[in-house]
Every structure is written in structure tokens, then in C-alpha cells.
Length: 290
View 1 (cartoon, rainbow, N blue to C red):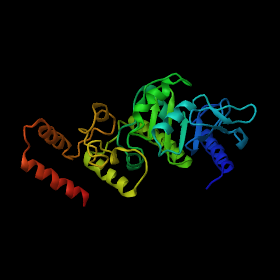
View 2: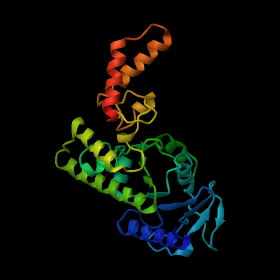
View 3: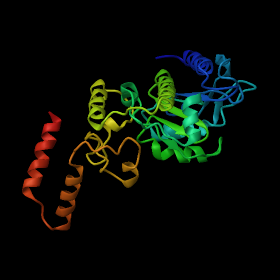
């Protein structure tokens, strides 16, 4: 197990990376790492992420209250949104917040990163929505962020920046790096007349690759609210209206969720069900499980 000092060094290294890659300016951005359910390391407020050393790093509890901080340092005022991620996503081990220029430009323009234009972005990121604007350091940001947490591993923050999270610090940072690279390519392709997007069949193939890789996190490729977590390519007709309207979950890959829902509804209302329809659904479910 990596000790706390090593994790603090890693946080400083990632801070230098986001600073040197022009993802933050001056004292912008913040990073956190989960040690256990009650202890978290995080960057302090009011310091440049490009010049940190381990003694800068603070330790807080699950409420964001200070457990340990050296004199002159206190946790980032935006630790609240990190804590909301950890609260709602127990699978997450690290959160990174930055202001990468291309991604933040999309956030300012109100344009989510949802266009399927390159395999790596579709497989690793899926879609990146925009969480509604909230005043920094208040509960507005975590409150506006919360509804996206069950479905995504990266969001743009309206008129603010970007937030990514994953199983560990390096993975969370890589998502931020991939997000910015995708945003830059999308911007440049728009300048060249507009990107050529993948069709639904190619998206389906890329989602299948992701599942075969067994990549962790939340993604349109491996979530369906209609089948208790079993994948059905997120037909967009499952679950709540809010779920169906999430970017990336609108594609219909023919998983028969509409028909299953209709069948269940008929059964519960006492009007009877079509035996042939049930047999067809069972056959397709069994085929999907092979």
C-alpha cells in the first residue's frame, strides 16, 4: 500500500503537470485523493499547483473539515464538490478540477462534449455534459453536479472549468488530459467545416470494446436502469425521463426495453400479455448473455 507521503508527492507531480500543460493559471484548480472512507488528502487554497511540495497538502474528513494542515495552509474552498463525488460514488479514489482552455471554452459557450468523433474519446469518456453554473466555494456546484454523478466520470462546469474523477489519481488526471485533447480536436474540426461523427453502429462497436476491456467507471456502454445494471446498449427508453435525456444515453441500439416495459405494464394491470412477445424477449435476453 502506498504511504501518505508518496501520495502527497504524486499530488504535487500531477499539480505540476496540469500547470505545465496550461490547464490552470495562477492558483486555479484543485486535486484530492481518498485514503479511506474518513480521510482524504487535498491541495490547499491560494497556491499555484505548479509549485507545490508535500508539506502543502492538507488532510480532511468526509465533511471537508480539517484533520491536519501545516501552518499557513488550508484546504481548497472547492473541496465541497470533491466530497460530493466521493459521497455519491464509492468507487472513486481521486478527483481533479482544472480549467483546461479548450474544454473550458466549451463550458463557457454552453456546448457539451457529446459528439462521437474519435474512438478513444467514445471508449474512455463517453459523453461529457455541462453541470449548471454554481458560485465557486458554495454548495451550488455540488448540488448542480450531483445528478450527473451516477452516469458520468467527467463534466464541464458551466462558465467555470472541468471536473474528472476515477479510481486513482493518475486515472483521474488522464481523464482530464483526454477531455482537453478531445475538446481541442473538436474545436479545430469545427474550424475546418465540422467533424464527421460516428454512426450508431460504430458507436455500438466501440461500446463493446469498452466492455471487453473491463474499464471501470460510469459510461453509456455499461449502464441500463431497466435491467438492474445489465447492459442493453442504453437504448434511451429505459429508466427515468432525466436519464433518457442525459447526453450519450439517447442512442437506440434495439434492446427491446420498450417492449419489456410495456409487457410488464400489461401484466400488472391485469390485461394479459402476448405469449409470443414474451418468448421473443426471453430469446433475445438469452442471446445477449452468451
